[in-house]
Length: 198
Ligand SMILES: C[S@@+](CC[C@H](N)C(=O)[O-])C[C@H]1O[C@@H](n2cnc3c(N)ncnc32)[C@H](O)[C@@H]1O
Image (cartoon, rainbow, N blue to C red; front, side, top):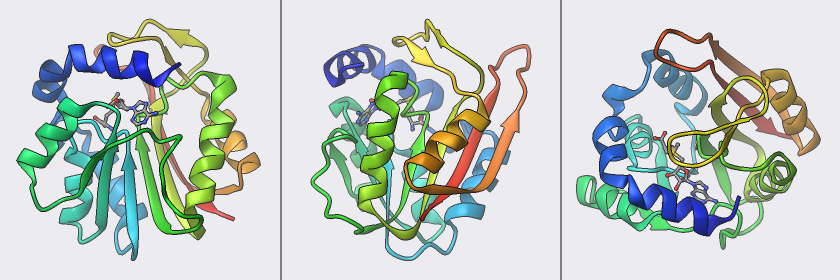
């Protein structure tokens, strides 16, 4: 899906998104432990790509990680900067970042690949691999399952965990950790993978 559509769709609901999800208290504690386990102690820069309101970037910074946030939506970046002025947040697209090869130690893509069409996913992961140093850590969080659905913001895609892991493998990553949470009455099935750049 094009950046313009995603930017417009999130801009329309930015205030609501920030209110509902823009704080770490809205994140499942298991997910926070997963992030801490896989990024805690990470030297070098970690990019939170598709950071939204920036709360997970701030979570990583509070763990002692040098994390920077990047998002397509200016309203999210304005909020993130106002909230945590000492953290670097920039407007940008994860697929066209002016970041040198092998220059970052980690990338977090937490629900920011969900609008990426299956045919586009490999190219985005290849771009992540290009930016990461060897052994660098990529963490992705996503809806677990198959096919697309009408997400509140704009069309979103689910992936089976094994399918995502295999796609990561082809893009030059080796799975290091995974998390799976079945659906509840109020939440969709969730998965996260951590993978190291080979
Ligand atoms: C579901 S939100 C997740 C936001 C945040 N990671 C969180 O956990 O709350 C998806 C985010 O990805 C961003 N996004 C989607 N495609 C992007 C792209 N190509 N470059 C940068 N950000 C993107 C959207 O603007 C949106 O803020």
